[in-house]
Image (cartoon, rainbow over all chains, first blue to last red; front, side):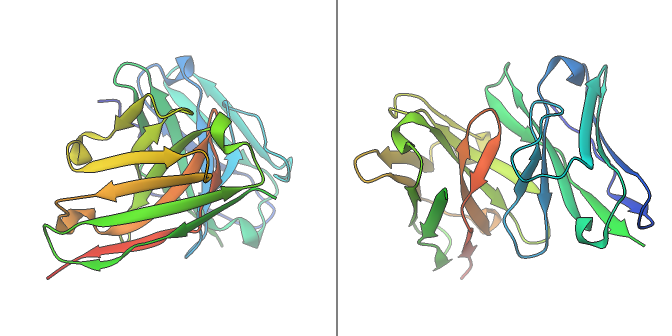
Length: 108
Length: 116
């Protein structure tokens, strides 16, 4: 099965840039989606198809995907960005939806 | 505003059954793939099942195949998850979600606890 690997945690100071990676073999050939989840809340889609933002998501959220790594970049990090972030792809071979293990973003 | 309102869930004994419901509004439900995603306590997200617009195609994660059934009623704008032969490891918050290229709208989640 296809496995997405994320770092368990990332820490960043307010105003700095946070980068959260999602690694897998040839992930660059797939469309990657990213979700933000705050404690006790449902996930929220923050990026789809590697780098597109849904309506209402700030431009501070951007994404890239190439080779074996997809990256969610959050610029000018704010305290309100503190959350768990998950990457997700569709594995066309198994017809399964796959989530990464999640990354806890801590704003120092 | 798109809404997915979930109901069902609760405490059930191992081997028991439960049915989750998800009522959709403010979008064309019959034109949308729909899904269930779950999250065990303190764990990450796990996809459970997808269903095509007309219900003709259904996909499941291996761990629930043969035990869970996803279904829909387009006349009622509703999605369902019938869960049979429940196990302790099925304990989780279950979310319904609309699937476009990504899961763009989510329900509020409902807790299913499997315990004796």
